[in-house]
Amino acid sequence: MRVSAVEIGQIGLPFPVREEPALGRALLLSLGMHLLLVAVLVLGVSWQTREPAPVVLELWTPPPPVPVVPVVPVPAPAIKSAPPAEPVFKKPDIALKAAPRTEKANPPPPKNVPEQHRPVAKVPPQPVPKAAPPVRDLEQERRMKELLAREQASISAQRQEEEMRLLLARQQAEGAARSARLAGWTDKIRGKIRDNIVMPLDIKGNPEAVFDVIQIPTGEVIDVKLRKSSGNRAYDDAVERAIRKSSPLPKPDDTRDFQRLLELKFRPVDRSR
Image 1: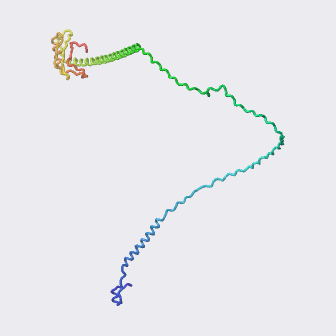
Image 2: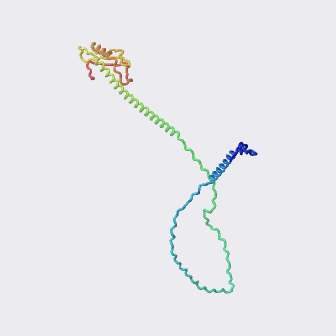
Image 3: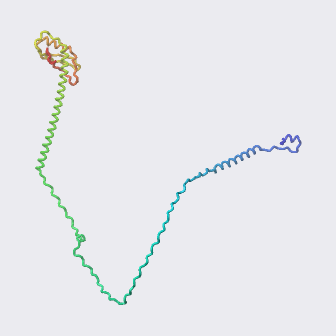
């Protein structure tokens, strides 16, 4: 039971009792040290723990039994008896004269030695004489050059002739095509003008009137001139009025076929239809 200092003074004790200083701090320090010890023990044990090594089991079956091979007894080899020894006769102790030795003389060298073993004397190579240059036939060379030149000239002339022939053929074809286009274009113009001609009543026969017509690329008629009269003034005037009335004239299909000056011929009875 704790007694405070006031109670002790009231009781009349000779000395007052003091409270223990820093008791709470000591308890906290002790508790902290215990917690630190527990943490050290736990961490030390956790660091030293290792995973258990796996257990490896080998499953195997016993090998099949070894077949027993019966042992066949091998017969012992037959022992052959040795043949009886022949009697030995001793030679008499009589010195025999040794036959004289004949020394072999060296055989003479063969007379016929093969040629392949004979030394061959080296013969120095002789210089090969140079062939004399052929004699040039200048006259033959000149004739060959002239023949070659004539042949080349003939080939060139044939080539030029072929080119000219092709050019003329192409020009003729183009001219024929252009003439056909011009004829068709002129027929269109004459057909339009003919539809506008008012024929007079006093025409005799089938006279021809020729007109020169000047136009521009748009077909507009600029001027009309009578080149050749039909002999009938009324018919000539009727044709001129029809030409002016037909302006603008039909255009060619190809602009390259356009002609500024046209020569148009008219007859009262046109047999070209």
